[in-house]
Length: 316
Image (cartoon, rainbow, N blue to C red; front, side):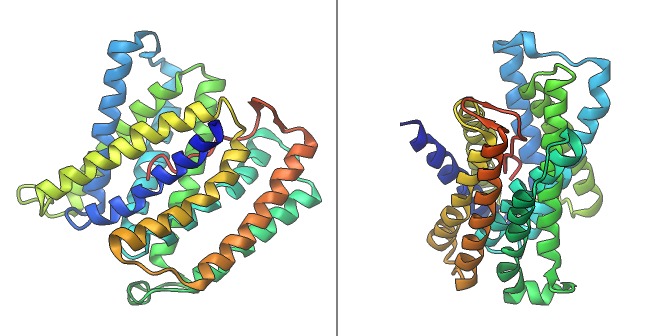
């Protein structure tokens, strides 16, 4: 029965990309990022303060890692994601986030000295190659936006968001494992601080009259749904699933998220999905399966216990 919750989690999570695109019609990306993360972080901190007071603490040596976590995993990740989401389909944006497991394997190699065998390297190579069919297909809005080589600026923004998101999970793991800080406290604090970064940036670059919001009802409805779906429901479901399954298996199962996102993009936004999307997804699935099977053989993945890097599209 637990396996149902695995795919239910990614099914629910995939709605955040379509919800984000709809909400972007009422507010610029920076203000949406700042407001959503600041409010979501306050809710988490309030829960800790009133329900789990023992976790509501920050030590002096936590401050710099928390600053980096706020800057990378919250501010840069979400600002780049929402900016790029203006020009990409929900499915394509979600698809680029599927780079996470492969980047996680590389971060694990450098940060945690995990071994990369020839089979694992082959899986990583196939996975990266699998992204080219979808990256080479661009919509009209992407072409008008311009870019660098065959990548549009919107795609580059999503790739940056993916990299900073994975780096954020490295920092979060370090805070929890080495520095003894509650992961929930670290997330709540980084959301508030990173949200403030985005709001200050919005105050400098956006037009406030008196705020950058054009439709308050639509904005608050969208933000409320995104916070409920991403910050509260999916984060906690994913944390519960990590106690039952390995992070690598969940990353593998997470490849269903672009399919769900494509469905919601079609249902809510009327978006179409090119054939290259399914070709790329098949190639990437092969690459991730090779990585997953090799980690099983090497013993990195053990039943109910994992030493690999947790991956989550939490800040989307």
